[in-house]
Image 1 (cartoon, rainbow, N blue to C red):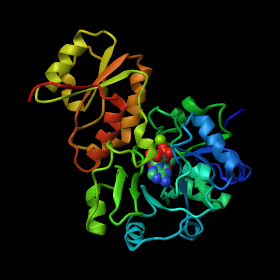
Image 2 (cartoon, protein in one colour; image 1 turned 45 degrees about the horizontal axis):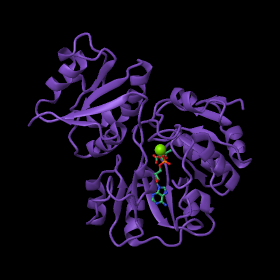
Image 3 (tube, protein in one colour; image 1 turned 180 degrees about the horizontal axis):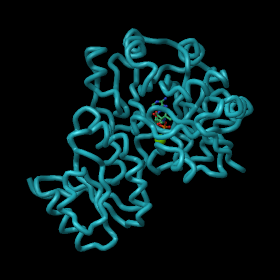
Image 4 (spheres, helix red, strand yellow; image 1 turned 135 degrees about the horizontal axis):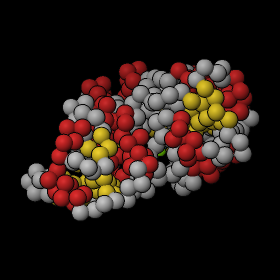
Amino acid sequence: MKTIIYSQSHDLTIPAQIIQNGGIVACPTETVYGLCANALNETAVSNIFKAKGRPSDNPLIVHIASIDMLDQLVKDISPMAQALIDKFWPGPLTLIFNSTNVVPAIVRAGLATVAIRFPSHPIMQILIKQANVPIAAPSANVSGKPSPTNARRVIEDMDTKIDAIIDGGSCEFGVESTVVDTTRELPIILRPGVITAQMITEVVGNIKTDSFDKTPISPGMKYTHYSPNAKVIIVTGDNAIKTISNLVKANPTAGVLLPQEYKEQFINIPYISLGSENDLAQIASVLFEKLREVDDLGLESVYTIYLPQVDIGEAIMNRLIKACGNNIIFAGG
Ligand code: TXA
Ligand code: MG
């Protein structure tokens, strides 16, 4: 299949028609690029799973562009869910609701619940409005790879596999939406993101936070994720930087993925800079792109450190820990 690339300035009439006709279009959102198809068309949705190589037991998020679209998709909206909608939509927050039968089972991977997101990105909003259907959209990467945050990385993974790609430049936030289950008494954060636990607590009073990385309530959490081809190794503890320095010097195919502050300690070592460790939002916005740059450099392994797990740092470390597949070294302290 020939994949057509649309630049930002194009009007979206044709991509919207592709969606209506059951095709797949990659589109930017404020978090990462999504692989979009008509959520109500089972064949189109099954083609998303094929293009990504995604296991069929990992459900998709349904994207809407108006609150009116929500009513046909979900059974009930609790006061807690309504408060989160009022505060954070449109934006990088996905909410889990009890689903109606309007949402095909394949979208939900057979669950009784459905994940809904109202993205704030204007291109995604226009695409949904013009196609006039709810849009199922996972991140636009091959399953297991870091999510793409610009069109070049979507092309890398999806060229010839989908109908079209809308190039909308780099995504603002760079990590996927926060996923919150609203079907129980207390909201549960299933995937941390830009909307932090503290921001959610401020709106709803109390949340349950212990879920991610333990019981996979969210089916996607059990799979290896976000990994470049290179092996990612996290070194933690007081001697982390010194230990990385020793390990990387002994290994000619290794590099480092670190905040810029450590650069002078790694002369003549492949150094992929995450930006300043004092700006975690900036690090989040480039994290997936930098993980892909590790492979561009042909490195076989890359060393990184723990960043503070506060605010957006929680989302950063959630992704990095998944990317390292439990390769964690404790270096003193
Ligand atoms: O920012 C985002 O959310 C991006 C953009 C494109 O919108 N999308 C995205 O989709 O990250 P995806 O498919 O890569 O991740 C969806 C996550 C998975 O962890 C999946 O298991 C979870 O949401 N999920 C979807 N439906 C669910 C449900 N009914 N119950 C629990 N978890 C669900
Ligand atoms: Mg994904």
